Length: 206
Picture 1 (cartoon, rainbow, N blue to C red):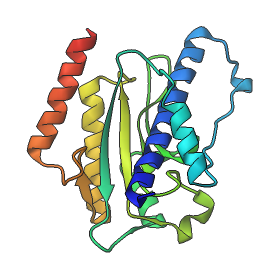
Picture 2 (cartoon, one colour):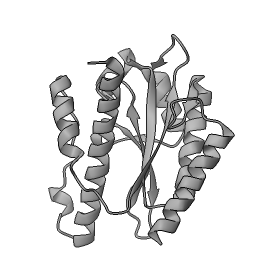
Picture 3 (cartoon, helix red, strand yellow):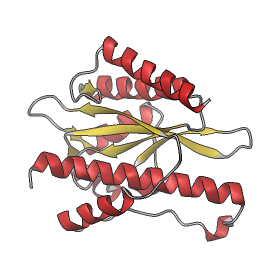
């Protein structure tokens, strides 16, 4: 299989799985059907390409939430370069992200009830899609993907601004390139188009 397709499948599997989990957890919380002592944080583990494809096929059939939208940005290393583990962690933390569920990073806020909610998350752009902190000193990657689901715990435009700010911070700290959904360096026009898309989404759900 084409390595690029494998990467896209991996990222898709990770993002779909995380979004599915967050949607399920949201419903459980609303129904008070899961006690804190019963909750466990899942981890992702893909032993080979077949596991990845099977996971992607299964999770892509999950209907997470009606009228939802996923927005993504990526921070990639420049040609021939890669991001080292320690520097990547420091840049992520500077951008307000914390390592957590699914072995990826999340940007959290506290809601009115004092509950911690993820606004957006960050996955590894290369196999296997998550981050093994125990091997972070020897870890390197060509990039990371920031993604969020709308609607979320923060107003959509505010959430996008926070994710965009985090992406810019990481790109600056790592001397990387901020990439949009068209797989090219993000431009002011691209940002405007994303904001228009988010605005249209807001109109469609209200």
